[in-house]
Structure formats: C-alpha cells, structure tokens
Length: 252
Image (cartoon, rainbow, N blue to C red; front, side):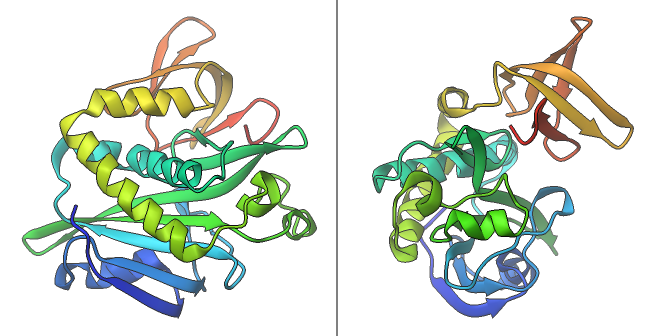
C-alpha cells in the first residue's frame, strides 16, 4: 500500500461504492473522504447512518495487498483505527470481532466505528477497498434519541474532541504499517489483535441463516477467523462474512 491522493466529496452514496466504480483507474493508496453518505453500509448489508460533518467517512484503495494478507485486512484496519485513536489521546477503545471499534460507557458497550472491506476484479486487475466510518462528535443523546443504545461517538464515550483531518491522517499512516505487518509478520498482527479483542474469552451468540447457537470464543486462527467451542466441546470456525456474533446480553 502506497500513500496516494485524497479525494474529498461533500456527499456521495458510499465512499466504498465510489472506489469500487473507479478503482481500476485510480492509483494504489487513493483515499476518498466524504462529509456525508446517502447510502452508507456496513457488514452483512447493514446500513450505516451518519450526521453530516460529525463523522469520519473514508475509504482506502488497496492494490498491492494480495494473497493471504487480504484475509487479515479487516483486522489490520481495526488495529489501524485503534492505533490512531491511541496516538491522538482517545484511549479506551477495543475491537469487537471482526470489524467494530467499541468502548464502554455507563456499563454498556458502545460501537464507535465500523469497517467494511470489499474486493473487486476489474478485467485483469484486482483491488480491495477498505471503508472506515467513525462517529466523532455526536453527543450520546443523538444515538439514544434514535433508539441506537449500542452506538456512541469518540466525543460522547471517550471524551475526546478530534478533528477529522488529523484522524484521517493518523489512520492512513497506521493502515499502511498494519498492512505491511499482515504481509511480513501476520502472527504479530494477530497477537496485537487478540490483545485488544473483547470478543475472545467470552460466551457469545452466533447467528446464521440456519439459526443461532451459543459458543465460547477461544482464539483466532491464522486467517483471522474466530475459533469457538460449542457446549459439547466441538471446535467451530466462525467466518466473518457468514455470521453475526453478539454477546448473550446484547451487542457485546
């Protein structure tokens, strides 16, 4: 991943969709950042709502990341967000496997940011798009008023007032390092993720198209997938694109 140009848009359907449409013609490392998304989305087809000017909405174009390292991209991106928040003094956040940045407020786990990584094949060229949305400046009352009790912002939960430009720059720098780590030192990346992943060591509820069941989240495998143990002691590999993992008592 190289450092590319930054494209700023006042409004767009989705920064990910913008890069998916144009990625074949843009250089590696291009970043698209928008003030507002009209059709933002998250993992498993969920929508992502934002307040204009109060969130960081950005997507990175990755052409040089290939092979097994692509499987670790969502986790590398999650660590990049945590690195950036820590470096800017917004400490206290962690990772909820596979792609949510969360922190505690009033005894409840709140989602501060989400990550969506997508891959495209355009002719003979393949590329990836890494979208990151961070709630920055919204007061907690905004989420509570929308009946979003599991959501929060960096300001409302961590008490840090960050500028979008400085967070964008910090995430970009860390994403470059974490992607390089995914290629050269994947085990070190997984160790860092495991240290910040609040999903591990808990009994979780796993929802699939066929139904739902509970299991103990034990560890991550070499591809970043979640290894769980069923109540019968059977080892289960949970793939991020196929299921939703939640705590027994709600979001966590």
